[in-house]
Image 1 (tube, helix red, strand yellow):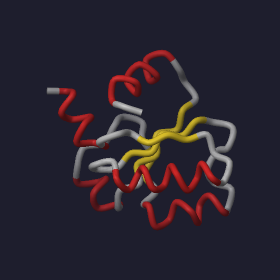
Image 2: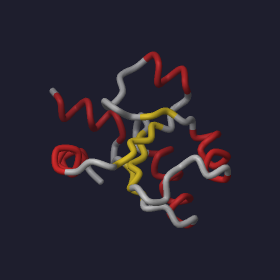
Image 3: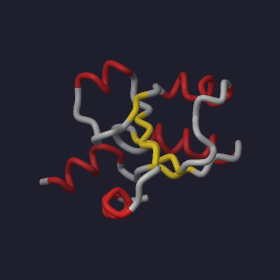
Length: 98
């Protein structure tokens, strides 16, 4: 999903989970998309196994450049989640804001 598609979905829909998979230090030190929740990539799969990620809600994964969130989205999609990643990550999000 690109930035424009995400902005449109955020304006039109509710009920999406924005999952920022950066490390906690990155999330706390830098900018984040409003209402995003942080679960670092290394912990996402543990949380999924515990049932702490919604399967009845669309999830959009986010990271700095789009690489980590793409991996997480691909792996969770194989486990039955409705999920997409933000292409270009926060770099693309911030570039679109300027």
